[in-house]
Length: 393
Image (cartoon, rainbow, N blue to C red; front, side):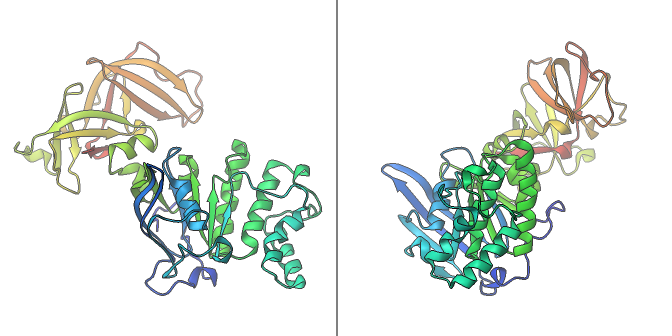
């Protein structure tokens, strides 16, 4: 679970959140493999998800995240491995017999049915008493704030309202696990952002376990307590949003999550560090000279490395900052290649004297009539060793 202060605890004291036995994750995916012909869509993937967690599967198109979600829902069967819910292998259990529901990207609403009848559809198939169905539909309508729209058909609703109907239908059977496949992709930016907050509040209030599949990094980082980044059917890294951004484990994750500067270099493990450089390493780069970085938690096993620096960590000034000790920062000189005004921040591309181009992002904390720097202007780009991440992949 995330320790990020932006994400309050995702667990709630509800029946749905406490069904897993003590010490047993609600969901355990154990070495699951799924192939389509010669294509290996999911490749030996293992993952534990706790009860009451909001978890995101993030990755590019074709990475296997939707295939994995469909196996959890029961629409696909693993070729190898196990899917355990509350310690029970559900891989062979039909979808309608699992305490799992899936909300599709297209919403999959019945166009000839009203809002109420769409929500009630799964309850009727489960043969619940009519009185209970009526009460449950009323509860769901209130939960997703659709009062007064119960008799409308999907074509009489906005995109956001249709999304709420699909969500209410998914929740009506009170699943232990709710799967969301790109649920906000069809919404415009403003509605998508407000719906993200509503989903987070709803998940906390109900105490259910949500797994969302998305290719939208901001969406995953806003909503989820933990994120699993997938590529080629495998999990590249599972971490909180903060750890994923600040401490990516591989070059692929660093490049996929957010913007980043990558500088190739070499680390010489035989070099004796300067006394003033305790707990720091010197990385020799061809285009940026020697870059000093904070010592990684794990010793470097390879000489060839990559120094990763997020754009917002790189500061700019018209002349070299007045630091007494050169070793307290890294300084690189160049000229502004171009400027991009993004509202909350201004993006700069700096072409170093070596030809290497770095990106810097500076927050616009005050109202500006002009950019702080202009193309062609000579600047010093500087950043602290602690702001660098050393990657071996």
